[in-house]
Length: 234
Image 1 (cartoon, rainbow, N blue to C red):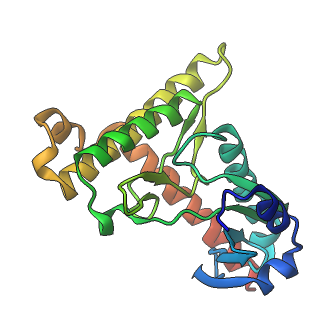
Image 2 (cartoon, rainbow, N blue to C red):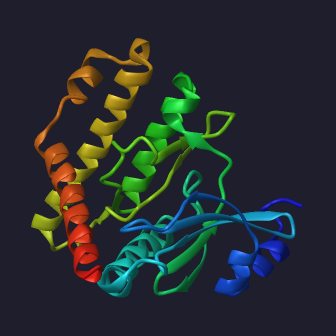
């Protein structure tokens, strides 16, 4: 039985939070501070990933964890049906979601070839066409590849979405973060497959204003989460 079995997926997605943890096979990450539990759930031959801020302390767990889950749910719903984006099975509750397990590892460990880079670039372009900029593709754990070189993108908590057509200032900002995503791919190629990188891509890999803005966005989110955790520990 595979993850494409709709009845098995329905059965897994219908499990309670407690039942999901009872079927946890392994953990990619254990909750602590600002980190969620990220567990691989196996049920009736189907695997899924549970991302859960429920164990986060105090203010962070009550307020920021649900915000981060909502942001990721919105991105996965917007990108539904796009190959290379995990399928959202269910929002378990305000602090947790259940999504498709993908048999892939970080790009840096797989070192895929030229065809894989082309597919990755096409995936990112399709994501942008759907109105989502990832904003954290410089993180080595957010771009994955399977044994066949198929790319996957994960962890959308820092994402920026395209605004309404009339919102020109916001859409200019969105376009800048899309450029930052593309710059991150160029940097990935320069670092792990320099023989494939063109001179234009080498120039693109250098930091631009929106690369700095993306890093500041991530740093701001981390600083805010640390503040919540410090207050919760008092």
